[in-house]
Image 1 (cartoon, rainbow, N blue to C red):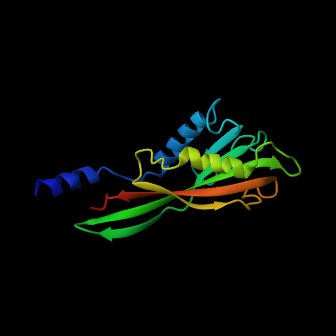
Image 2: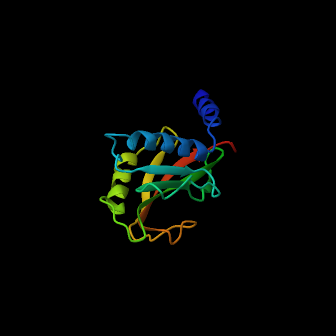
Image 3: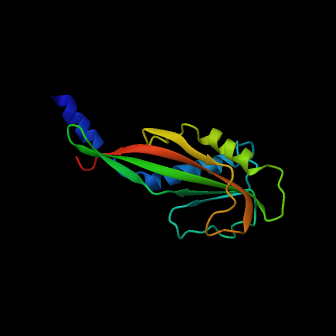
Length: 166
């Protein structure tokens, strides 16, 4: 009987990981975009913590990566108590050119490098992470719609168990 009590005690300290996850991605992007990093060809990136955040002078230095959290969904699971299995979709958007301009690296190449840099990176925050979608046909994203071309997106979904309800 000691083991279930110990498990319950350890699990109750876990909580929502969205902000921590974005902070960890921001730190990794800082490392990966530095000289000799996997993403050294990326000139700027911005991690959006809320929908109202906009990067300062966004689009002036391309290629650009914008990272934002999608809608977090959860599923109630009951197994010796109740807990929530939460999915955190992190969207990586890549922009490589203004309308009519051309860059040496294509958005698709950079997106593949992002996948390589972040593949299986759980940051000790989630139980697992999957690439749930890649879209090489994105023309632009709101609110930047119509200003950039040469863009694509990837969603990496982190899954975590939130047991605060136990």
